Image (cartoon, rainbow, N blue to C red; front, side):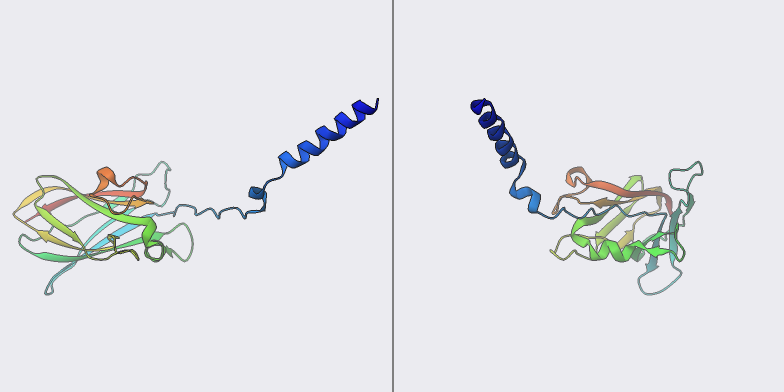
Length: 184
């Protein structure tokens, strides 16, 4: 009987030691939820002045049944445009400017610009994250010869930095917006 009591006591004590560890004393890591982005607006201002071109995609119901409302514009051949991107969450009132959050968490974000079709453009990133890697909420776009195609803006959350582009960036896409563009 003494042996059984000793065996039960040994099992209880060993279970207590195994169940406790230093990991239990650590604070849980805060969850950084992905941003809700309903609206992406790209403003292209001609270098030296002129009429700005605005590209916008707005999807107020997210994954709901309604398609995003997309507004696009034409570019002038041979013109250099200074570009900026504004992201909004319009599911709240007043609308939340997500661009500020992306820039504050610059190391965890990066915009990528890709073109398709025959679109003759060159885009260069103009702003960097706090580690000196590309962020991309500001950029320069040079419109080349008359052409047409698509211009796509992709915001990646937690990409590998530095990278050579979308192909090796990793991370997850917060928003992907494509615009049909004509250079006249």
